[in-house]
Image 1 (cartoon, helix red, strand yellow):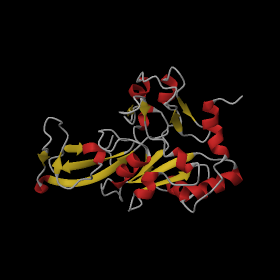
Image 2 (cartoon, rainbow, N blue to C red):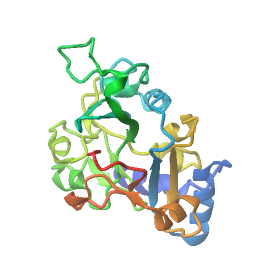
Image 3 (spheres, rainbow, N blue to C red):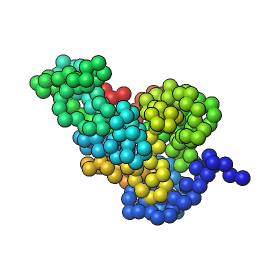
Image 4 (cartoon, rainbow, N blue to C red):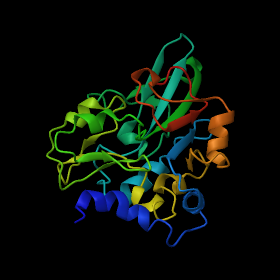
Length: 258
């Protein structure tokens, strides 16, 4: 007798080879079918991100996160390095509407924001963030009912029907990617659009990015374009000191980013 969790874990994987598209994820699934080895990995190229917010909007629409809610599965942070050495960063509404000016909005009590004169700016850049799908996920360890679990191909999922909303996983995640869904009142987070990638499609944010700042790959396939970059170029992960072994890698990550 197969229960619902095992169906979610293994049932989706068994149909992953059906209806493959020409997308990167489709190629990965076809490759994985031959090698029987698949471990999803994500690559973010911060050099290409312009902070347009199209990835955030696509994610909200794809994954039923209310458009006007002040929570989102993925978001973009803007960092402004000032000539005096100070750093300011913000992500208004997760960058859902992008960044259209040099007004930094970090204080909810000052919605008008603070203007940073261009003459004071030494450098500015954008950093997309999402669930890191850790190889050693602390969120899985602390869930008292098993609602959070990791699939055989490495993606951490949440079973809404089992989640009791205790919030332990939210506190355990060092990356701040988990939140309470405003409609379902259970824990929510990015799952790299697991319902898409297991059917040969790209995550919604990858397809939505007009500049190719996001891509997904199979870290176990040495011929995979994403894997080749991770193995041969200077990439970083967020908060490596926590020992969670995140599977989201970054190109061009500045040391001020946390």
